[in-house]
Amino acid sequence: MTTPAMTPSRLDDSPAVSKKPLGKILLPYLLVLPALVALLVGMGYPLGWQVFNSFREYGLAAQFGTASPEWVWFENYTTLLSDGTFWFILVKSIVFMAITASMTMILGIGLALLMKAVSRWARLTLQIAMLLAWAMPIVAQMTVWGWLIDKRNGVINYVLSWIPGVDLIGHDWLVNPITFYGIGSTIIVWASVPFVALSVYAALTQVSSEVKEAASLDGASGWQMLRRITMPIIRPVITILFLLQLIWDLRVYAQIRLLQDFGAGGTKYDLLGTYIYSLGIGQNQFGLASAAAMIVMFFTIGLSWYYVRQLLKEDN
Amino acid sequence: MNTKKTTGRRIGGIFALLIALVWVFPVYWMINSSFLSSATLAQLTPTWVPFGGTFNNYKTVMDPSSGFTSSLQMSVTITLLSLLFCIVFAFLGALAISRFKFRGRKSFVVAIIVIQMLPAEAMFIAQYKMISSLGLLNTVVGISIIYIATVIPFTLWMLRGFVAGVPADLEEAAMVDGCTRFGAFMRVTFPLLAPGLVASGVYAFIQVWNEFALASVLLTDESSRTLPLWLRRLSEFSNVGGYPNWGEVMAGSVLVAVPVIIFFLIVQGRMTQGMVGGAVKG
Image (tube, rainbow over all chains, first blue to last red; front, top):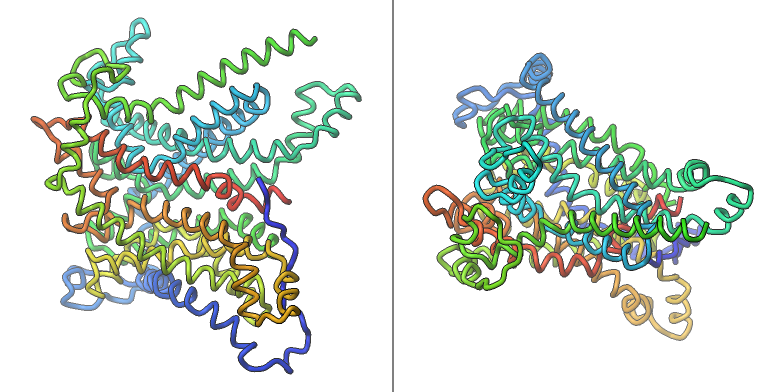
């Protein structure tokens, strides 16, 4: 993999800003303008609307558009935060995020180390298998898994029934909320491990063999080498990957929604994404939905702070 | 010592192959089932290899009555429109931030990065309200407005890396040789950027082509479905006695997945690098 060189390459380094012709000063602004306008329309305006409406209450009349919503300050937030259902869903989402992201990281790092340890052909086979799973569009992923876990003819029930004493033919995984989330988590782990494994593997290849040789001459064992040399070098990559996984698994919407298509819906099977959807588009409670969305957003921004700082560093 | 090491490697190799098998199995199963008839699939024992399979499922699913052709058309139109604007806007923006120093540059860069982190899933309601108040629900333009804004930040960030990779000295040399600045850019920098533009374009293509969540909110009308929405509803369309015809549904999944898998394999390396590049370099 070639990395584009990061040497600063600016034509415009001359300090004498004031002497530049007007056209030259305006040029960068003109270049930025289209992207800026597109972002303001597609993201800026909805974001502003959301912040504004998280302070407004949509009563019945407002839901039907016959009266404008009432300004209620923080009432939506306090309503949500004193609502058992919201907490139930928030806690479920956080547990789901933590388990799914941790499983993804553990398996991803393990498989990256495995790729490093095995011969070339075994590594290539594993990498191609990972890429194929990673490339699947979400809806295709979910559809295929819907068939794999199908209660009548699903191959997973069939194979699991090979285990002596287990008979799962006809078992519906999507009825019990625990197995519902277990299946959701499994699918997300299956789909996200390739990205983690391949990224960690790429980072592992950057650990120089000289350093490792020197360490083994000094009598370091394999485990010591992993802990003292390899891990510290790849730690920044792992931190960022873990953060991205946490962020992505907190806001998971499509997978849960599509699993609900195969099974059943309702707060019993909701996570934050589907819950906000049912508040807003399902029940027209736009104020409450906006406030819930803002809470998710604060969480995400808090989680991603480190990643944002890293990217800014890269810019300098 | 040496024999111990090779035995270890061999066991590791076998283990790696088993894991590869587990990971690729769902993809294999999709392809396998897509060639089997509903009678074969309804048997209690699964058919592991599609010997004697047919293309009938594909024929049924691609028939216009299933909505495949209209959804394909919708997906292609939305993707092309969004891509065109996204690439041009992101490219111009990338030029500005990697080749110029200007007041407000830092704020723009921060905005680009922070927007990437905003959970799209938490903005649906607001975007839905905006598009519906503009009367653009179920239209190509309506959803494209949002897609362009969603894809620009990452595309711009990726392109910025490529533009910065082409040394400005090259352009200056061409200008010394008598090119205008624009001419130097078109003749020297632009050709060097082509691979980067392709990679970013494919990346943006995959994002838009696969998008399900926002589409499910903004495109509720049957005639305006994109391919992911069509696939979601396929298990209802191919229903036999309250039970989906999984062979047809899998054929639909293959049709949706294959173009993406091909494009994905082309740009995968650059994508991994784009997301964690900064961390690898430290």
